[in-house]
Each structure stands twice: as C-alpha cells, then as structure tokens.
Length: 116
Image 1 (cartoon, rainbow, N blue to C red):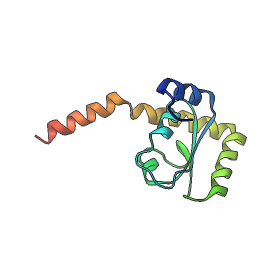
Image 2: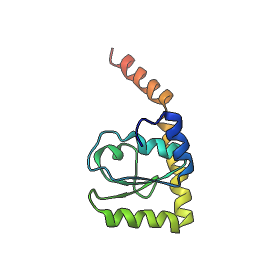
Image 3: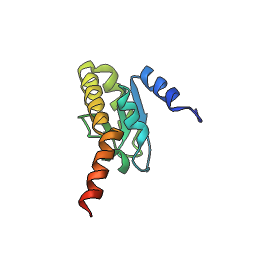
C-alpha cells in the first residue's frame, strides 16, 4: 500500500492488533512508533533505528535481524498472552506520547538555547 495519506495510515493502524517490522536496517523507524501511538503492539527486528524507542519486553517484542522464527514466536506470544499484549500496547502508547512533536520541539528549542 503506497501513497496512503496519514489519515489512512492511522485508520489501518487503529484496526490492527500487531504491527510487524522486519527491517534489516533503517533510520529512526517512524512507522513502528506511529503504530504504537495507535494502540498496536510492536513486534520488530532489532535494527538500529527501532532501538531509539523500543525496549524488548517493555513496549515491544524484538527479535534479531533476519530471524523470522523468533519474529513469529513474538507475534504468537502477543496473540496468546493477553496480559503481555495489553502491557506492550499500554507501554507503547506511553512511549509514543513521550515522542510527540510538541515534546520534540521543546527539547530542540532547549538544545538551541543552551548551545548559544
């Protein structure tokens, strides 16, 4: 699905239970964080960018890069363990709140002011 509007992406994420990201390497990995903000549990590979916000077992389930068996195991855990799923979703939403545009802007502004 390409060329989706932000509203369409949010609608899809709001209907999903789990967001799977199997990236080998990418930057920050915004789609995973967006999915967390929409209440998806994140199952992701442990590529560098996702480690900026995802913590295995706290707000996401992470698997080694290029390890589809572990990724599948993590996804199965999320569907079979309701308490784990609910905790990952709750922590994911809190993580996303801490990465809001407003908070990022405030931090950036403080950095600029402190560097003068």
